[in-house]
Length: 583
Image (cartoon, rainbow, N blue to C red; front, side, top):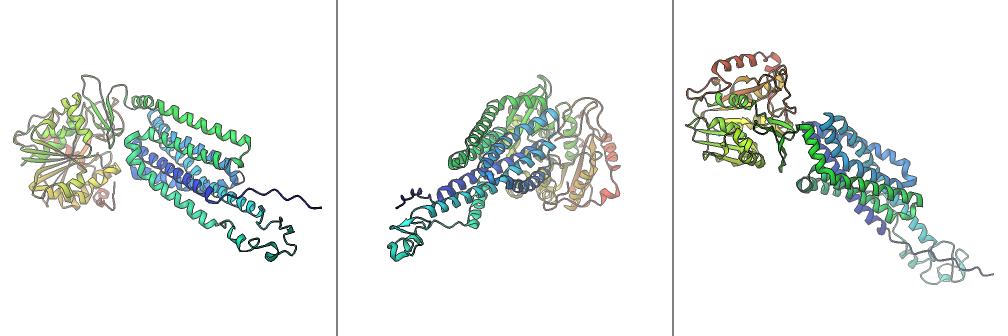
């Protein structure tokens, strides 16, 4: 009896029908993963400070967690499709919401370090599980197609060809040309190449990471900001990962698994969409929790968040990236101590490095014989606010509107190195820069930087540096001193105390003035320096204006107080350089 012919198997699809969509999703997911990573580093540096430490924590924890995720993915290989879909949904939710949760923990709990570690660990585990699961899916799809091909007519399975069962003595000559012969070999599917698949996956992963790394600073941050950028990235991640599984690998899913993935991804997208709608309200509430209810101005410049607080009619406080840069009620103590000792001598031309708030320029302009003041400010938004905000403009007495003042925008190191005309020399250089304990400003307290500053000084010129508190952080303070001496300066240390009844740890402090007794070791530390071996005299110019907080006698007392913090250990501190920062 003649058996009915077997039903012909569906013609197998080319392996590229699976591989290319998978590689595209790997590309997108890798870009999203790197955005999450950079988002954590950027926000942690802003909230906690010390960008090198925060970057090291995030990167090391994530790399470790990625290895852990790769191991854990072994348990999901038997259900790779649904496993990958759930991993991408979890990654989209956790990564997308990470910035908001980190900011919320800082604003309302006052601590975000352990939250940072937790998110780094969770995102790393989920990211590490992606490639093994996708590898399993590709291998399974290609193996299935190879088996389908072998089961197809003429594929070398058990089907009869030309009425003669395969393997019954009917070779190529009996079966006719093209059956089991050369034509069959030409129709053989692409052989499974595990090494090639791995290479393709990692290539797509690395290229996606490149695109994500470039998109974060040049697209997401300027256009969407940190919080919204993370939420949008999470939505893209969820759509790409869930869409791949529900479209390309839908036949590998049971009805229950399919419903689970659809529900999970829709829930994730709903959470991210809701958070995106409410992000502005959340940010305002978080700012109030950090800065209080007296916020006057809150803007994001291209470089940082700038917040001005203070009651109407009272002096404003200026925060840069969450750190108090100007405390309106006692800033005069800091700026008088910073500027006036350095003005004791020729001071026709003055260079202020930093000082975009205009307060150091205000003190300089109190000398009528000053001819020109150049302010080098990194962030144009700060100088613009100092000119236009009524509170700040009143505090700096509209110094930046004075025709003698020129504001140049750029990094102080770069400006000294390449922008400043060679023929320009200044009688006084005032370094009114971020705290030396902040990693981003470490190069502005390096031996190389002070060497450039020396090249900008005229004969007999003086440099003054804010170096942090000598009593609260003596190692940092005396490292600045060692660095100046290594750069060829003779130095004179001194300090200034803050107001009574407030936190006065200096510019760039993270806390707010809360009242009460000042902390032990509070105040500001300065170093007056001059090139050569002769220490500059510490005093006030005979034509100095009347000051509210500074006297010659007070400077001498401040010098003795600072000198008491000097020890044999601090005298042996090495200088800080670009390649070996010591702060």
